[in-house]
Length: 301
Image (cartoon, rainbow, N blue to C red; front, side, top):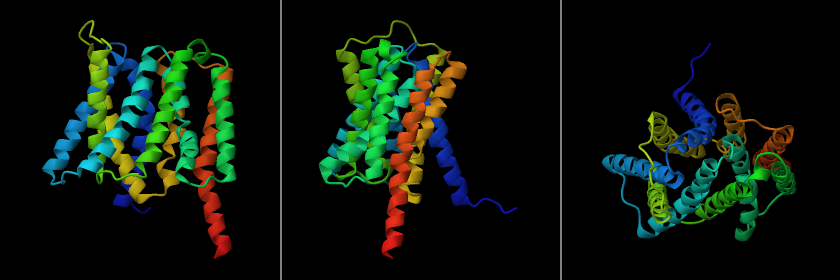
């Protein structure tokens, strides 16, 4: 049996990182907000990760980006991390189950397709079908069970998915710092905004966070931010977009399994069905368009 090559090992490790680590961050966030105020924890997560990544890049000789690139990256960081991740963290602090939060966030590719229309990006029929299926899953998810009893939590996660989707589409159309420097600037900006919002909202530590709280924050900084973001950047440079974005329909499964297995979370039959519908919709969007593109090229060759 032949040995795996270095690129193959990196590919497998990167996919494992996104599938498992990013999927587990929803449960870890839930553990963290038991002793940290939500915006404070999210702000410390991204500011610390941004400082570490920025320092490492500068020590390795990376040049400072232009002012325009920095401003664009800061806006993307606010949309994706301050609003997107921040609202998810607040919602989990308000007792939205981590698994359901991940299911709602899995709708990001569906909203991204809608925003793509603003930039003149064509949408295929299978993508519209995916959007319709996904919306039906969202309606089902919010029509009964945990989210129906927590409308503000559901609204926050929905706004988080919309903000992440818009930031992703807009960020792909503007000048950003090259390589990992973009992630460093985005995390620095998000951390500053979140900590400012934490201060203005009056968040305060009622007591020193326990060991679980510090371990959760450390996991989110090192694994959920620095390592996972670099793994994603490796994938988008070396594999097809369909493979790189496949985490979108694996993460909710991982999050639900962790929440139900270790967090005493429960899902109703309706919520399990909604999970399946939303994942199917994301599969239609992320895989279907590439299959259709390939087929079209073969027919015109």
